[in-house]
Image (cartoon, rainbow, N blue to C red):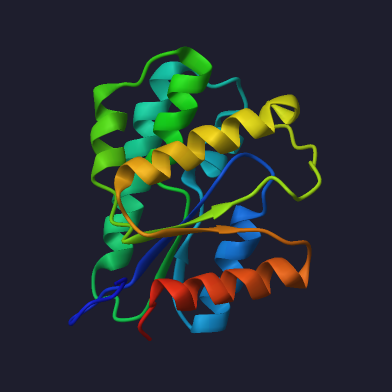
Length: 179
């Protein structure tokens, strides 16, 4: 069960591009009075103002992992992560056909105890950092298989608008988030 005797609840919201991960992370954090860690890749890429390279992914993974670990220090409530190293590993393999060992190690050592996997049922929203509106089904399957491979509990979240948030709340309860 998610939580356990002396839990630090860490839930990662993951999935393909344009599936509402950031919005859901913020909404769940606010609802449960927890903390959230935003997706570091977005911040990193917006600051660079250039196309990213394969080599950037290791830097992104390290900084994101550091932010996750820092957020855990002294945290007594639930922590919601807007993606983790798993997403970077998937992206690296998908885009470049290879994964830096640093990225792979960080993906394996995610502090996430469980996952919410966002489905692709939301309409695509164009964004300069998004790349594959035509490959959402393929990317969802890759994410689904990767989350399964972690052997951590997870739920798929579907629905539009308020229904998506309601479904996420139900999923969090099913996972046994202890508050």
